Amino acid sequence: MPKISKQEQTLTIDTLPDLLTIGEVAQLLRVSPLTIKRWGKKGKLPAIRINSRGDRRYKKEVVLRLIGVEESEE
Image (cartoon, rainbow, N blue to C red; front, side, top):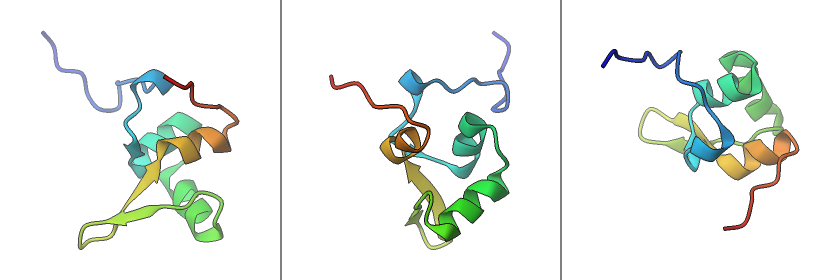
């Protein structure tokens, strides 16, 4: 089975984890990771800081709300 690179993986709403990386959000919204960081600084897309490096993670429901998609209740 050939390996699929991270860039070739397609994100769908159904397969999204609860916390998304900058790269995942950027891919989903089709903007650059720098845009995601800027939106965070402006308060448009708040980030959760994790670990000692301060890596950013974004809540799936916040990202979906930003693009106007409501999560289905299961």
